[in-house]
Length: 292
Length: 234
Image: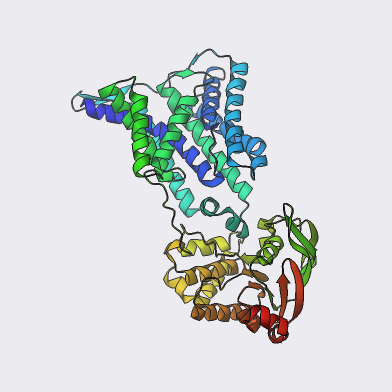
């Protein structure tokens, strides 16, 4: 029973990673850049929903919606101001800019909200028992896993069935050819940042519901773990981000439960290294083979 | 239809094309022949807006399109079949064709154009649910052409459609170019296969190291001593 309980909480944690990883992976797939400020969008979402609930007294859903709108705007603005001017620059310049944006956001948050940790309101507690009380499952885990599954399903439909989704896939394969189809690549990149940043806000609310402390660097660790998850699953691949996120959450939780809390990060990264040695493009990464 | 005026394009310090001028009239097939590196692809990419010229201008139906972004030029009726086909390998044949019509909203007309493309290229209909990356080179060329046709272009720019194809397929592709032209699409064709290109062209230009050195009807150039020596193997 302990095993099942760890599995469920691992999947819950992994769902949060997966939602963040989707943002990393989509932006990488289309803009071909690692947006290291993605984790700090989560932080922005955490502060936005925190103040919406505490200062404005809004209910959770309204606060989450506000956070999504703000994060979407923030993500699109960052892309416009910081990344778009570098569209033809080397990927190293873009990477360094992204790291700069990350520090900028953290320091801006510290300046505006102070560096002290704020306690996120309790939004969803309680649990239910299964198997005559042997297994206790928290509602939060279930809500988190369901949210992730719904997002994943919606995103898959969007990418495969809608015109904009198809344009996104075209841009991720060949921007030059996409332009010749009449696709406005800049607009597609903006939409990608909007979706990724909106998802980061959802992840922020779920994350803070589980670990209720809000501070300016709160996005760093989940951001890096989710980046790892995206690479693990195959960066650029949406199902890969989903699978990578879930597996990372489960591995991390099992490592903490059965091996050692201190070593859990080391174990997670050891698994990543092994996976990349065997499959350099990640679990579901695209094989690069184009016929000429 | 299309007019190129004193166009020069530079890559850094290197001038890829120098002061070239030519035009393509309504309903014509015009070909630009020349060796590797003569500036043929550069010329096409500048016309479709992918490259910005150092000087000169491109006019489409009298309108200066030199400063218009490439994704808008498509909507004005100019489509390009790029060098190396560049189909979206991870997407199905049908999705590739749908993307060709990306800017269009006239659903019924798109449906009719799709039918027309499948009539021109029956192979594409047989394989419409297959990923484009699994097609043969010839089929990918057909897909790239079909995809450009889906934009309902007034003028179609084609960059080396015969590249890497068997002689049999090359003839097939050129036959289709002629029928696309007969259906009312003006064609600007860039080719290394001068013999085939001059065979179907109304008019032709020879591009040598970034400059236009000869021009005339397809038949005139095919008969010219200079062209025969340089491009037709004697």
